[in-house]
Image (cartoon, rainbow over all chains, first blue to last red; front, top):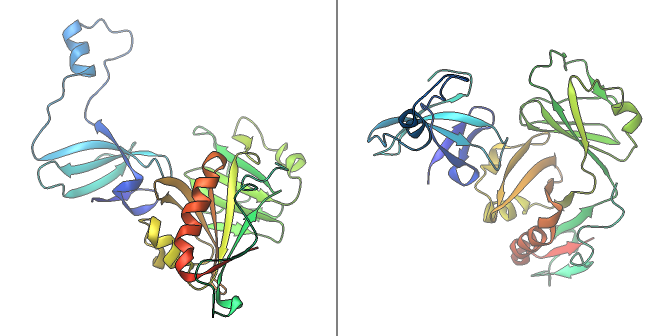
Length: 88
Length: 192
C-alpha cells in the first residue's frame, strides 16, 4: 500500500488514486507533420524505467485532480508530488 | 429537490445490532438527510473572479478541506475551485446572479444520498471501511475518500456530540447504507 501526498488534499491512501502513466511524454505539436514512428512513440512506446520516474496520478476518489508524482519504480518510494503546472 | 428518498427501501426505523442492555442515548444514531437542495459550484479555470467576498445565503466559500455553514445553508469544499452547497432554502434566485462566464452551477439535489451518523463510536465505524486518517479531522472539516470501495464525501458537522454526514452517489446509496449499518451492528444503532 502506497501513501501519496495529493497537492490539494494531503497524504492519502493509494485506494483513492488511479495511476495515469508516464508524465514525461509530450504530445507532438499541433499541425506539425510527424511520422508514424513518432506517433507510435507518443501513443504506445514507453521506457518503463527502473528507478526514479515521473508519473501521472488521478485523485479519483478525492479532489478529482490529476497531478505528478516522482516515484522509484523499484522501491516504490515517493520523493515528490506536484500540481500539473509545477515542475518536479 | 428530490421528494423521493434514495433510501426509502432500506432505511427502517428502530433499534438494530447489539443494542440490548445499553442506554439508548449511547447508541449510534443513523438518519437520512433528504428534501434538501444541493448545488455544485465550479469556478472556471480562466475566471479571475475573487471568491473571498462571495457569499451564498450569507455563507462564504470555504478553503481546502473545510466547510462553512449557517442555520439553513452549508457549503463544503469538494476540490480546487469546486464546492457543494446544501440548503433548506431555495437558492436558485441567488445563484442566478452568478456570472456564467465565471462559474458553472449544477443542481444535484436528485443525485446524492446523505446519511448522517451520530455517536461516540462513529469514527470506529468509518475506520472499518475507509483508509482516511480520521483522527486528524475536526468539526468544520470535510474530505473525499472511499468506504468499502464506494467514493464518498465526509462532512464533519460537530465534535460534541460527534456527528458526520456521509454523501454518496444516489445509485450507490443502498449499498453504502448497508456498508455503514453493517459496521454499526457491533455498537448497536438506532435508525431515526
